[in-house]
Amino acid sequence: MRRRRPAWIAAACLMVTVGTGCAPSGTDESRRQAPSTFVVGVSAEPDYLNPIISNSAFSTRLQELLFLRLAEFGPPPDYAFVPQLAESWELSDDGLDLTYRLRTDVTWHDGVPTTAHDVVFTFDLATNEAVAFPERGRVRRLESWEALDDRTVRFRFRERSWEPIFDTQIAIVPKHLLADVPVTELAGNGFSRRPVGNGPWKLRDWVPEQRVVLEAYDGWHGGRPAIDRLVFRIIPEETTLRTELLTGGVHLYDRFPNKFFRQDSQNPELEFQRFSDRGYVYIGWNHARPMFADPRVRRALTLATDRRTIIDAFRDGFGEVSAVPLFQGHPDFHPDLAPLPFDPGQAARLLDEAGWTDRDQDGIRRKDGRRLAFKYMLIANNEISEEIATLTHAQFRKLGIEVTSEFYEWTVYLERLRAKRFDATILSRVGEMIFDPEDTFHSRSIPTEFNDISFGSAVTDSLIDLAKSMADRSERRRVWWRFQEEFQKLQPITVLYVSETSYPVRRGIVDDPIMDLRGPFYQIAKWHPVGKDTR
Image (tube, rainbow, N blue to C red; front, side):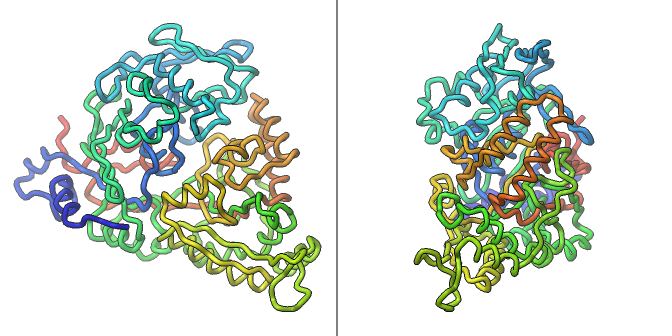
């Protein structure tokens, strides 16, 4: 990726004043009073910073710093909902009306108060069919929403919601800045790159392929963050990013490659935190391609994939083979569902049964005159997906399947993924604290960009709908277990592993880099720079 290197170095020396070679000299007192900056190294570019249309995990993390939701997941271990933009809520006895009372001290970063009218406007956008809202399943059960006054908003559900707070838990955007923007122009509007939020941080700068800079918001109702500035440096090459961490160019490496953990965890200048990132890595099979429409073929491909070797070879053993796309430790995770084994012999028998055979003995299976061949669509400079592709190329070739790969820059990759112009791809997703597979695995979602593999079945559709009709979590869990059992049979994707991620932080930058399952930046507003006088 191109970089204007001299300009970046000059800008870095102006901005980064803590823990880097550009830090100013002077007395301890002058250093304490200097603006504190925390630098995070990331490998991916955001797509948009408007939460109504964004669909990348990194963008979501940034939006959690820029925007508020009505309620948010609370601290561990139970992660129960706690108020955020709202100060309280009330659910009617029949479960159909949910009324929020908003805080009075929340303002947008331009100083305009955040009101119930912003909430109503946001849900108008999220439910507009012309808007590519990435969490459409959340709002499907909503019948209406109205502002009773500036501080009060009432939601009405078509039927009793399984998780009413979760269904209304989306980032709120400002009506006064977006009301005049045609919904078809949201992506191209300047707000998507220079948003005005109401969270603890506000956007200062976004230089494509270089950095995103956030500043602490003085008007934050929860108290101004102690760190003055967050710099997210975009460095796609992991070896370069690791070097920047080791030499002090970044203070935290987001989604650190676990293959470096054993060596770098011995570094006294680094403090490591390790926990589930709520993610899973998978091979997505495009079900619109005839060869992947047969579940026997998909099951054979999973059986032919040595997932344990992938974990050991490319993640230094940190990760677990999983039968389902759900992180372990989640209350709805099926504890007794064993993943399919690595069994090429059984895979070959399934392919024979599905009619894919090598009758002419040239090493490639055929059916009705068509070769069993497909192409991976992969993200350029993503080392682990390339490694996985290389390993599975060899394993599938032994089975009589011809595989090639094509690489695309992130923006082009996203365009092709959303248009479903691919055979297979290797990707990761981050799971929610509330399990909801509707957007990615329900046939109702096939017309959207989020069910990118075009999967749906009558059985799994009905189980999703049934689970989401249940308010009782223990009853719902049993249905989710049945869904996971059916998912195991159909293998709509090959779940390679559920991931655990290391987050190394350079010592001497902040006193208390608290992280948990909600994400590495979730509590960053509470982090305190070493030596900074905040009196």
